[in-house]
Length: 149
Image 1 (cartoon, rainbow, N blue to C red):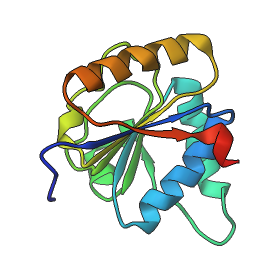
Image 2: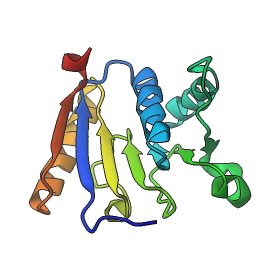
Image 3: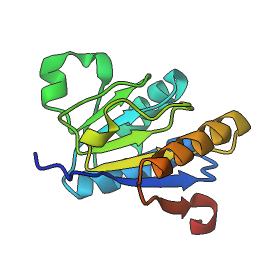
């Protein structure tokens, strides 16, 4: 896998429906032929696992849960974790956790997508991560999910 020296970091904010948003985002990742690690809160991890089976009748978004075991992980282009972990095999890191620190080993991914909902604790944590990314010299991309709908 070829990874850029500095990952592209994008904040997708004002996400009103994280489950639906993540399904669409992961479909794009799959269509681009890329692999992704998705870090989300535990309840959302369960919902996302189920939703990816039924999101689109015409296409299946191949995925597995983080705790599926190494054989399943090795054959899955998308892994869903309910905590902050790292997966060196992925090209894209999608973080929807309200972390106050940057995701672990984020530098090893080609792209980092920070998904920020409407809840204030999550928004505050995202603001802190934004400042840290900026202080480290990243040029961040902004995507307002509310304006895109």
